[in-house]
Image (cartoon, rainbow, N blue to C red):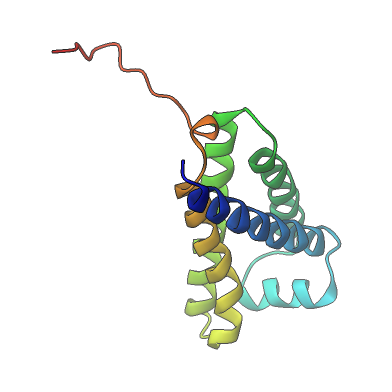
Length: 132
C-alpha cells in the first residue's frame, strides 16, 4: 500500500466515522428535526433507534484493528443505509441539499472500503483452486 493510498484511506475513514457517529447519535437522541425528516420519508420513529445503534457499532467495527469479516459487514451496512437514504430522499422529491449528506457518506464508504489496508481485508482461500 502506497503512502498516498494510506492517506486516502485514513482521511475518508475518519470523515466517514465522524459522519456516521454524529448522525447515529442524532438518531439515538431522536432529535425533533431527525424525527420530522424520518416521518417525511415515511419511516417510523422507532427505526431511528435501530439505525442509530447500528451506525455506532459499525463505526467501532471499522475503526478497531482486526475483525475483517465484521468490517465487511459494517461497510455493507453503511452502503445499504446510505444508498437507501439517497433513494428515499429522491423518491420523496427532496432537493439536492437533502440528498447530498447521505450521498457524501455513501461515497466516503466506497472510498474507505476500496483503499482499506490488506490487514483490514478478508483473506479468501479457495480450497478448490489448484496451482498450475
